Image 1 (spheres, one colour):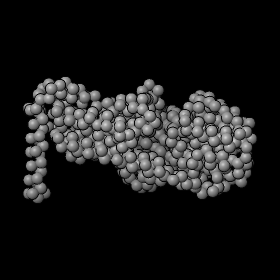
Image 2 (cartoon, helix red, strand yellow):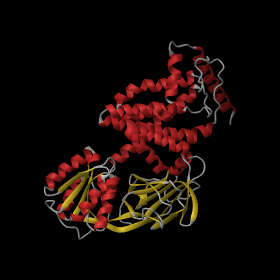
Image 3 (cartoon, rainbow, N blue to C red):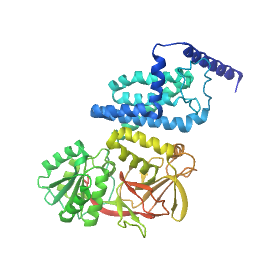
Image 4 (cartoon, rainbow, N blue to C red):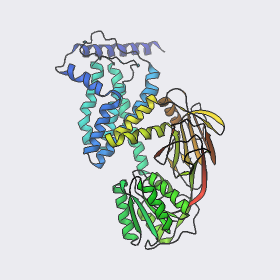
Length: 495
């Protein structure tokens, strides 16, 4: 390092301390009571989780989407701060000389000082919110600025820590907006799956029974309006919750074609029912994300109606998980998208438990925080080899993108499982972040990706969770994952 650089760093550190001392000497009426409490309210993102819950409860659909993006921005900033920022710079906390005792926190932070995690979280949530809903962003911007300032006011951060944290938080907001726009703007392109000649044409819907997940909301309602208009003789069966499996099995036993309207979990259950009955499946996307429909190339209910009228369909593969010998539940299960063991199923379990009480957005934040702080890697045996993993991801077909849980597929008839492993060791946050930055099908100390037709998983610890297509269950001691190529006929226009 040159003398000029050392001089510049010394001047910057001196300016930082002088500004810190200036804040310590100044007194703002009422601040001694308000700012320390505000900073404590923002501990662990609780203030922003509560804000997201309020916005989701009283706001418009756009406001709810903005709250979700704010939460995602906060999660990204927090993961970056805790896994990279704090452990890279290792700056000591300021000395509390000159800071009035009434301002000082009862429990001083033990982590390093640079950058400020509170400031990053505050500005990440507010930036993510404001980029989608400027009105709500304007409401929370003064709160975010006050939280950031409180970190200097209470003597736990230098001003430059706060500025750096705020900048990182804003950057996280822009990154999440870019990712969201890329996902929303991705053009739905059908794959090159093999055409299924045996699919019957149902121009008026006669012989089609559509099981509708009544909990799917407005997206499902819009799709049903199209079905009623285009396929007037189709039968619609509405059900919800525990009724779904029975309704699908009963409909599949008497229909020529089984239809389903709902999200990915509902579609996965319908695919299993159609496979067991040996009949084709017609998918009417009606969920929040509709990953299967997007990867499959269905833009909406209109596409499915057109394919049914013309008798156009293709063959797709399914993933299957079968409990090993001695399991209390020996029936196999199926997945159209993904299967996972480790941190994600645990997060899903917590979110499903808390969401009915506090809402999905704050439940997701609390679940992620609990997993990152308290979760332990799962020790199991894969293909006869003992492994400790934070996450095991298996996709039905090859997914594109890096990391342990990538996003999209080009086709659904490969007959391969896309297996991704994030190995155990250390804490989950740094490990999962490092795995997410690894390239596809590469090997690194934290991440492995490969493709295979089947995988045997044994010695699964009792109580271990697994997830498939957004559904959650407790795993048996042994599981066999398999890819079933060309297992199911699904309607989709050929052009």
